[in-house]
Length: 299
Image 1 (cartoon, rainbow, N blue to C red):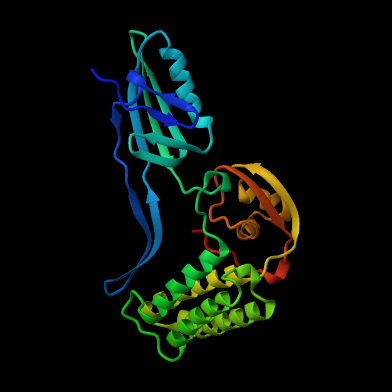
Image 2: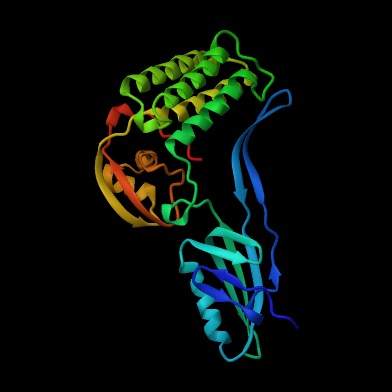
């Protein structure tokens, strides 16, 4: 019988007859927030693509089987790793390892790997920046304002103002080396004022419209709020930390005495996960107190 394709997990190489003969299905799912209304109306807000966990399985044989089984079991404590198997390469963590001893000194292992988005600069990943978040949220907002997924159509100036906002942001970035950090305070304030004006027009719809209107207006308001959060100027730093697999709730409780202020740390570091995996140098911003009224949506 020919040797199996080697499996590389971080610094651990599983090769020859120990390499997995069985690999589980892999793929992804699209998550959505679905709302159902009377009359049979269903609306959906797409949340993004989520990769499915992958399972590897094989039996370890020979005098070193037990030692190898122990090494594989330790992978659940390895943190963020890169997995390579045949043409498949992904970044993530080992979620679970099952070791089943057999009667003849062999050990069967089953390893579950969960792919994730790369969050650390060392990994070469592509975590969205505030500028990416701004551009993406405005593109979604423009679509929601002019072609909402419900049958509802906005009246008045909301569609035109949303389209103009996206154009104004694009023009402002082009005039400042396509860098959000270079935007003058006056420009930021002007754009933030435009967002506030549109959101104020949405509030009466959200508070007293039909089910279709409420759904469309709420979706648009959410996207505009994400754009607002991305546009806000950064606040002064309180401290910088080097941490592994940080828990933003715990850090917020430690530095602000309020775990619900996790979003201050998330925004300051362009993080969209409350428990990201890997090594991070985190900026802990000062608490702006009343200047922040609600957290951003984590993507």
